Length: 341
Image 1 (cartoon, one colour):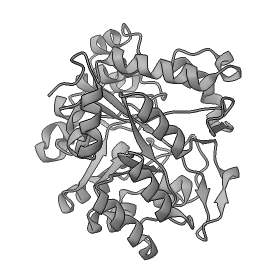
Image 2 (cartoon, rainbow, N blue to C red; image 1 turned 180 degrees about the horizontal axis):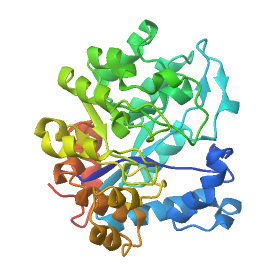
Image 3 (tube, helix red, strand yellow; image 1 turned 45 degrees about the vertical axis):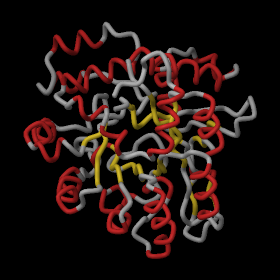
């Protein structure tokens, strides 16, 4: 099975015609130098051919981590309920065409598109992206104003289920982008999609920053018992965000059924650390020190997730959930023994 990082962000400035834009503000502005450093890029890269530099750095990190592929995420702008776009509410934008093109040109990339279901052309765009090789749809419901439980989105979700296109949805805390709908941070926003038959992945498993934001991990766990098509990813859970509690990690380690719903994701360029986990006893200090001997943040994140006790199967689980027709092409184009079966 292919070993896949299921949660990787691409960012662009649009200077090379990619259609991306990057307008950091608030915490995003403060974190920008840290995110660049996580990719091994200097601040001056934003004034150069940033997309080319970023893609090269990301491809190098995938190789350094020993992974076969990474799902790269488009970023839709927020929309009002009537379908009007709200670009001023976002910090960055990554068009679907950009990630689809990168996935066509680079075998180690898999494209996750982002489509607001209130768009007037939402179904047409979904069809276009399916035909273009998308393997997933990514969203941030609380940031982009996407309430997937609205009945009018049923046709969109039904087409996703028919096409075998999973829905990766941010759940839990969000502190880097403006939040329009705090009530949509719970994994329960995915109920209708799950009932229809869409495979859903609750990014971050609904976790919230300790003493700052509500935590929905219990909601996530309860929903995994009701819906066999619900998974969670462990992206950003080895960082400095104070998202992951020791009791939650113990439940994943000790509950075999729950552990079987976890998918590996790094959330790059969000940098991994392990410091918080070591401080709370979830990780040994020697493992923490060992992780910093790895220059590649993606390799460091992978090492930390293994040290935290996430099973190796979490690194291959996503391959069984993505479109087999697209993965078959990737297996053919990946050469030199990179694909593991």
